[in-house]
Amino acid sequence: MKRNYWIILIIIIGIAVLMMIFLFPRNQNESVESTNIDAVDLIPEPVLKYGITLDPFLIVYDTIKSGSSLSDLLRPYQVSLLTIDRIGRMSTDSFRVDRIRAGQPIAIFCKKDTSIGFQADFMVYENNSIDYTVYDFRDSIIISRGQKPVEYLEKSVKGSIKSSLWMALKNQNANTSLALEMSEIFGWVIDFFGIQKDDEFRIIYEVAVVEDNPIFVNKIKAGKMVHMGREYWAIPFTVDSVESFYEPDGASLRRTFLKAPLKYNRISSRYTYSRFHPILHRNTPHLAVDYSASTGTPIRTIGDGVITLRRYGSGAGNYVKVKHNSVYTTVYMHMSRYGEYQVGQRVKQGDIIGYVGSTGLSTGPHLHFEVHKNGQKIDPLKLESPPADPIPDSLMDEFAKVRDLWIAKIEGVE
Image 1 (cartoon, rainbow, N blue to C red):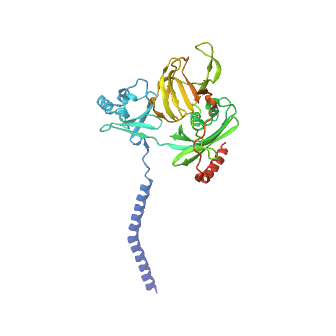
Image 2: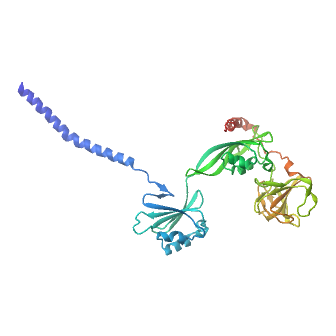
Image 3: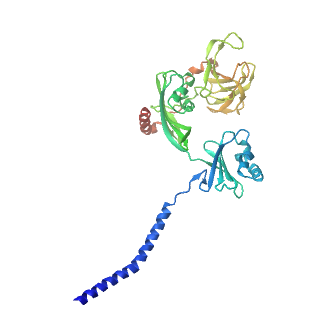
């Protein structure tokens, strides 16, 4: 009995030894292999800035000083005069070093070994908030351009006008450039030079964000304005691959004529039969509207037409006349210079036909704007313009679904 016991015990021990011999190395290998896989998975992605791996460099951030040259920027970082000269010679129209502007940010990527001082391998010049130029002078000189990642975020704003649209937006901590965007969209139906106290707005818009900083308003997506008690809606909808804005009944927000030939500015003199002339010093009819604006502000034709006159008049200065159809003609006076269109050429609504100035009988830069109907001057601010094409009947059901969603979203703006 004891003999059998010992035989069984020896067999069990032998089996255990064999298992340790064969299984232990195999398990050990599997463990190492598993560890290697985990290690690969845990390797961090390289951190980049301006498309350059950050790890090997120390970065010096600065801004361009007034009067700085490329040599002033790079010589403190041991970039040779020969290299600087070659950079200047290689710079094309896209990367001209003489267009480097004071106040713009730069970043100098230097070797981490500072025992011999800061030695640069790259310089990055920020052309604007998005675009940048990389100067790489490690081995050979390479000049390239890049863009920072841009994120587009949807935002909204609601407000009531107490003094001006600009101030109403500012009071809501919204980008004040929205005033221009709103005038582009609602300017067909609302005279932005005649915005009233207690007019209201609800706007849904898209802002471009770079490195967590809002940079500019990319576009208005939809909105509503209440002007002098009347509601005006901007509902986006695409017809024939073109997106436009429409009223809830499907009527286009666009009109045959723009409400004004300038973007958001100020009326300095209205249509009247008796106005004291600042130069002639007597009361005369002023059958036009004067828009105060800085010299060089673009002047847009309010509608499609043909340029019939483009010349200098002793009182009008440089002026342009546009014939729109058999009924309407518009006149634009006191230009500092003309646009590119010549007499006899067709222009489309919104085309730039000249620039604000103070030529002729004028006390300062402004646009004198006239509207002639059947040869008679009428008040431009009372010009009623028919809308462009409405939503086609075949698309009204689809438009209704889109409209209802946008109206609910606009009304929900807080």
